Length: 565
Ligand SMILES: *[C@@H]1O[C@H](CO)[C@@H](O)[C@H](O)[C@H]1NC(C)=O
Ligand SMILES: *[C@@H]1O[C@H](CO)[C@@H](O)[C@H](O)[C@H]1NC(C)=O
Ligand SMILES: *[C@@H]1O[C@H](CO)[C@@H](O)[C@H](O)[C@H]1NC(C)=O
Ligand SMILES: *[C@@H]1O[C@H](CO)[C@@H](O)[C@H](O)[C@H]1NC(C)=O
Image (cartoon, rainbow, N blue to C red; front, side):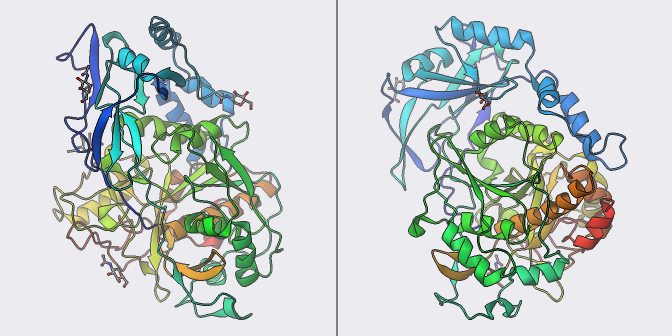
């Protein structure tokens, strides 16, 4: 997961919800920048008749109830373990109160506007309106900004306000002050092995040079026999313009999984104008990796590739579109693998909280959500020395998802030096990891004090191979590195466990973290390596949980026993 560019800085963004100082006709500033974010230039007022598609987040009726239900169904030993919520049960918790819905509706109506539900529970609304109407509604000044490197233009405002009496009812309005950003994971460093066609025995190349599916299966004891359960379902998210190529997949299977039918492929789900071009020159290395290693590890499990388009211009890699789509599915995927993310310091609580809460809904309904931790060690999505504090990554810092770090080397398996890990500055530490993380912190003492927030959600949760992983991209075989490899590999293993669980008439695993930390001793502890960044050597992978490799790497047979198979 090598990032291309995170060229902007929102460090000057501050949230002034509930502030009463800057009130004009009962409006309070919700969020504002004191200057144009780095990387963008102001290029004039936005034309007043341009139509904006906004989402408005409404306060959820009973999120604490949902959270409690999530832990009840996800914590082994709990009476309700595995009794995942139905769509309706999850929605009942997060549906806004009548007071919230009514007051938002009448506010919009008083401006001649009406919104439609973006999520089935109605906690996110969609609203199309002109720049002129948006400026009026939100006391904003929507303007055109140009990205200095790409020249791409975008319409944003440097500040927006909401009526004082609605501050507790509104959780976010987007896109407003959050400038577009490219997720990390959109550009991998593909090292071609220089051969268009491979020898028939290529799959037996040394694991030291190419960590093939066969090497991974051997290392983690992953079964090679095909899964049997049609209802089992693994989904892989794509990001804008990163297309998964079927011919590349086919070539991959002929090289590395000769035992699987060469016709094995993924189904496609497109959202918001998304497509999945099959022109080989438009294949995305990340999308190819993600489909090849879910399909290549989760032998026979149905896989869907979700391709997001640009229609809504959400500016955050289609993450909102994907959530809205999944929440509206009657039956959610059992596993969702995502190798994209953002440096948390570009984001604000206003946007990460609703996204993370939506992941909690999916977890409560039985989805295992896996996210790559990032490839910049303690400096986040990509390596940099240019940071004054460690940079955590999102969604890894959301306590309701599983964050996957990277390992390298066989004898013994060591931490990959790019494996991102650390502590959130936005989300507090969840109780399921407190014991393991506090043990680590007590060993760390005052090292790196001031560079990270020791009371934040710590990540990654676990890790898997992420170095020298061969893929086929644009018809060529080459290797890639990154937690982008570790994530689909881990997702594939979870999907295989789910296959066996479903065959045994048991529930799929759903939200994994309480299980992972309760069973941390069944993982292979990674005790060598560090994750440098920000001019430091980074954290050290040592005994027990650490912010480089989490609890360690998975061992299939031990997982199988621990889940009761
Ligand atoms: C959810 O899906 C249904 C059926 O496909 C559709 O009619 C409805 O508009 C969707 N709702 C939302 C909020 O997207
Ligand atoms: C909006 O921004 C433009 C360009 O910076 C500025 O000229 C104008 O005065 C602003 N309008 C308001 C109402 O603040
Ligand atoms: C990580 O390891 C690779 C391979 O050994 C090396 O080339 C790279 O410089 C290391 N990165 C850092 C940040 O130390
Ligand atoms: C540290 O994290 C905690 C929990 O999320 C939060 O309440 C606190 O504000 C954070 N402190 C800093 C300095 O970021």
